[in-house]
Image (tube, rainbow, N blue to C red):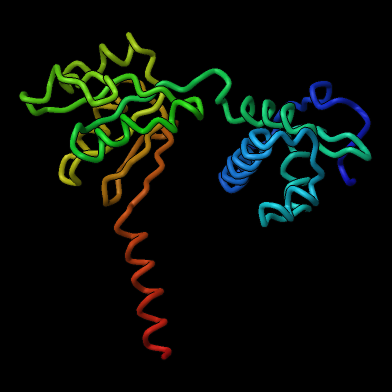
Length: 227
């Protein structure tokens, strides 16, 4: 198999000397989920070709992406599922755990706070923040405390928050982002619609559900027009 060698996976790390594209990290996340499923099924080893065929991926792309970070395969065997899964978790920073705060204790914020899948993937929701007095001091169903947003800087330091999730109305989003950035948080996931600005050195990733729905609506409309 190309790029796979005779050394055990754990003996072939590679220092990253060039920037990694977001497309590559997105694919690594996909590979990790595939490996999670394989490990749960009791699969011990798998080749890049078998991995691609089982999960409808591209074998050459898998080998290319993994080779960027090291040589993890064994000739004639393929990849050790548990070891490769461990390496990908390390590369994605999930092995050390990521502490997350959610800005906005509305329906979306509360739902995100109580989603158990985050913890399974290495993300711990440590706090919710809001401005509504009736909500402050309460907890989500899963036990996450809702704090006054004015305490954000203090809680960030105390809880070692690394990622902030923006789940507030569009009109308040930029103001909340400014608070987050001012507290030193460098990674932001935004669910609010509209374009937000962050300074250099802060990573902002936006997920606009309305845009996704509009894309699906376009697909449906095109299908109807073609009938």
